[in-house]
Image (cartoon, rainbow, N blue to C red; front, side, top):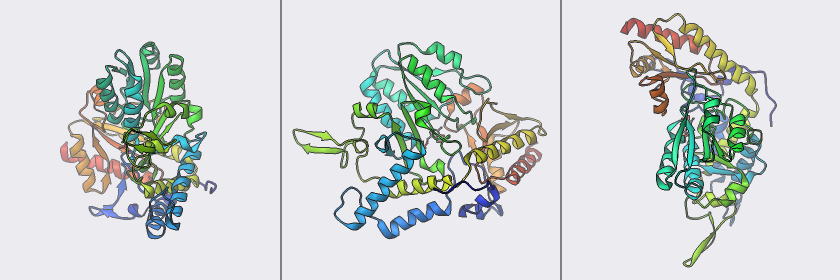
Length: 410
Ligand code: PLP
């Protein structure tokens, strides 16, 4: 792996072809990185080269191309395993994304381990994809989904969590980083508390994976999930990581090719991990693209990138101080570079449209966190989510756009 070069966002920007364009007559300012990140040329090339040279189905090694595809596909799994410090690569299960990974656990583990009266704790900070699968599992088993309160600043209330942890709780499901507020949750501490109460822990790492080193062993959770597209990799590709002993006890989620050992009309038996959970032809190019993204990140000082993103957040907070009626939502103790706000008298979607007309891409709305929006009593927010290729100029452009909106709507 390459060693990290001095951190230089303006230079990194050059690695991303999509950022070199104008949108609506102005150079693109892309501030929607929590929704999806852009892809560096090396990732685009890795996917294109796979289709140009090696495309074949995997694990059916009757010919050279199939061998090459299989080697690259399984090497990608090893790359992910090293990236998150998994003890073994068979604990890395490919999914379509974080959402499918959570659904896999909710169905496979949830339907077999939850009973009437059991509780699943999920925080107010959760994305719908870490709420709804648990509601479905609860409806099927008689268990109950119970929200973990948060503080006004947007941090999980650890005291309240401790108070909720009793023998009824079978699972605690929390995100590592909130997509709406940027809160970095103390997931190692939460895992410790939950385990002491006999509950399993699922950490949704969708927003953490691009902003900090993730070490599943030091977090100590039972499941960790994320999506490749938030990590500079392709869409349609994600990971479920799980404790091996737990994954071994879980029944398959989807049935089909690849996940079986034997099939007969008197019954079928299941393949070993990770294949038991990977029915059908997988997203081979997606795995290769995700590994290329991880290799790309290996050349970047991630701590410096995170500090840079937080400096853009601080710049946003400072510039927001000059704007009457602009209210930041949340003020978490530990945060990534996400700035979520409302502007009095301007609907978030109107502001988003006006910014788009100036080539500035932000996300507006509830961010798939309706319970959180209800908690703050706002219909939605405008969210600028910063990545390693954003610059102080991008933030200046955002605030010039907000000032323009104020003039137009004011
Ligand atoms: N969890 C969080 C915190 C997210 O921000 C997202 C996507 O925005 C998801 C889960 C779902 O990810 P995906 O749509 O890639 O499955």
